[in-house]
Length: 476
Image 1 (tube, rainbow, N blue to C red):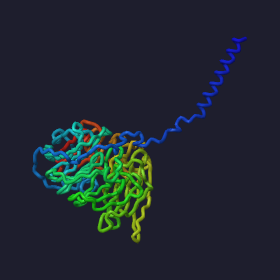
Image 2: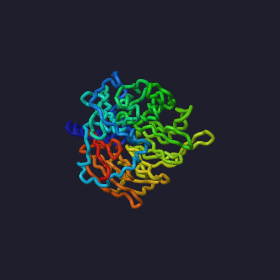
Image 3: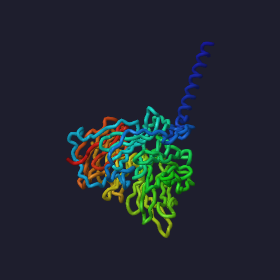
């Protein structure tokens, strides 16, 4: 009898345990503590702003030699002289690589990153990261030989964070200006590398270093440097001769620095700076006594991560793009009686129209060109063309067999030079008949070839994560 009661108790316990587990399985929410994954929420690269490290901007200088100046248009900043990524020199360029090894003038090893070069009068300027010395290093090379002429560096400890350096210097006839991964700004003499001044945006403006470090490239307007620090000031203008701040744009909404760079525009006769921050997009006066004054702003399209810069089209239209599912938006800015307004013309997800995750699209002969992001469905990573009047209609595509990842692209001699992630460069021509591949060749042996391309004087400079290459692309 006792044995029977014992088994009855065991059976009842098992039944109770079964009902309890079944109820827990039905009513328990296993994802109640989870949130939508947004880049940066994994805290990879977090605390980039924190710390008490004392950075002595520009503290070290090394001289290696001189080279002959080569006067020419150059490629003096991000997206070239006109900020449109179009080379306008009348130099016939090749359509066939033939023996690519004969065209490669030089290659240089770099610290891991995506920073790209600027070129001025036959000199190449690149902000590298010296992993052995743990230093940001502005390096100056000869365009023709690749010989390093000098470098100006300063110690700043950076953890590997999908590479380190990401920005492009801004150069004019007097100055070179850089922004380092942790928002240290440095201004030096273009020829000699002599240090003029340095500013730490984190300390001076309370800038929050973006995840994956700074991606914003400096903008020079004459001898005035334009930056978008966020924090205490949304935009600022600095006199390169003295390092003194000329004007500041207030930041009452506390928008943050994005990876996007400040662009210029003229809308209804008004010169302005256009910036796509974390929080929204704005236009700031760029002329006269009102320089630095906010003209317009909108938060109607405000992704959590912004890498491409605003693409200024025509008739006051501006295309905004972002990755990680954000898609794109087309806005139109107008002024009436001194009052500015912003209208949302279109907004589309990656599978609905043109979008871009990393590179800023191109506007050429009335069409927008871009590489679609990886979340754009069947046309992901393809090079496409759309009309701004109908951003959802793709009029040309490179096709399913021609995909380019996150690679950069540029226009020169009415041809497209497109680099894929693995360092293969495609020369293409685009016409009413579609996308025509003229030739392709492997120009880099590494991976993550994401840094923007520079083209000047018949030379093309491109990089992957660890090497910079210079190629003679003149027609032979």
